Image (cartoon, rainbow, N blue to C red; front, side, top):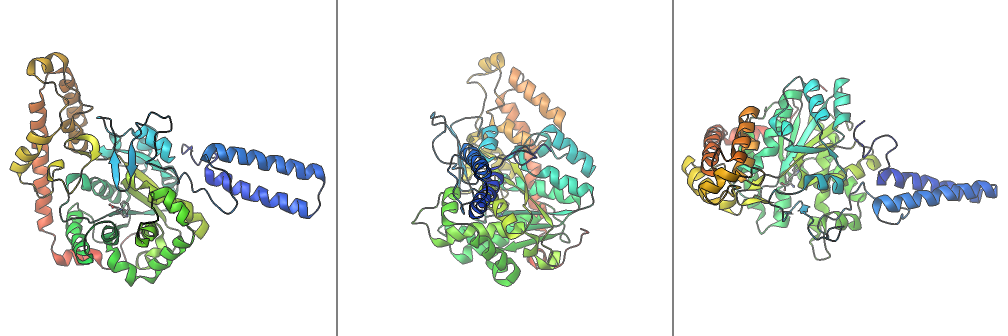
Length: 476
Ligand code: TRP
């Protein structure tokens, strides 16, 4: 097993915690039973050793009754552990770094305790699915995972799984970055032929933003059209608004309550940085994002089965929710969801931050015209890794690693060889920044135009079909 965080012999905080609880009980019962002193002493020795290990792994003292939650209390916003102060900041609401290349994802893997997607996993996905891996996998855009090997092991033994992803509908306008998880999820749905649930967290956006409930729900319906336009199969996909489905499904709400009972205020404070002045809606919300990870939240799809494995493709900033979910799962008798994490889609201004729907110039919107794509966005705003003058550029070459146009091409240009040639030519100075931008414009314009064409076909009736609780078509 390559998932070293949770593999055989590896000691995760949770495993250590469980062993400590067992050992603590053992010491107590030996004492009660007035066992031999030597026996009690050796049990205590082991207990102390486990406590030392626990402190080493979690940085905290063991407290009976206070589970550690597999790395879930890593604070993503604290100062750098090494005191240099240059740590990236990544949480569900904020992403920032001082590095022009973007967030250091290798460090993030260590900090979050997930596992890097190595070539062997990509090869395995190819073998098991029988399809060429998606370019997001070939290029490390989906770069980290939890338990993906287990999902594939089971799939090879004819045990299927389902997909869960989501979107926080904070405005009508979606940009290309928002599509990354959906484009990839659509590919997964196709190659594995499996059901998918998509959560629209209009409740979350109401709680976090200055928006009315009506606005948030309207954004759900509008964003659903863009999501559907990615090509999901209506017979295998259920899209739901929290504001509608939470009230309509007792099974869903029961899971929310179960999760709420197993997470303390202290834990969510540690994971999400909530403070005493945050409204209580925020404090409970993580349980609502966790609930779709459990198949019995959807009885109309899974007929009450609680053991169908869930796989969640998402951007890495959503991981805190699922660290919490994975910690709770075994304690309420459910399988832990597996995860595939993507990097962030960089803002046009540079990879220091992810794009924002509220800054028109930071992104390419799904409603942009070819002209807007060309003028407004690419030519004026895209951060370039090129040199100041043509002479210098020809002499020293450009730097694709910090060049936003090149980064965008890695997301959207399908042809690997063409991409590699562009990389080499740009680095050597053979092609100029303007030429690179032209290639990007020519890649994006048809892509966005096709999206707009498909979105036009999605009427209210189709949205309603996707959003109606109903059985889906698949074999588990
Ligand atoms: N919280 C996410 C957002 O703000 C939406 C979301 C809900 C989600 N469930 C998810 C994203 C599962 C990825 C996977 O966009």
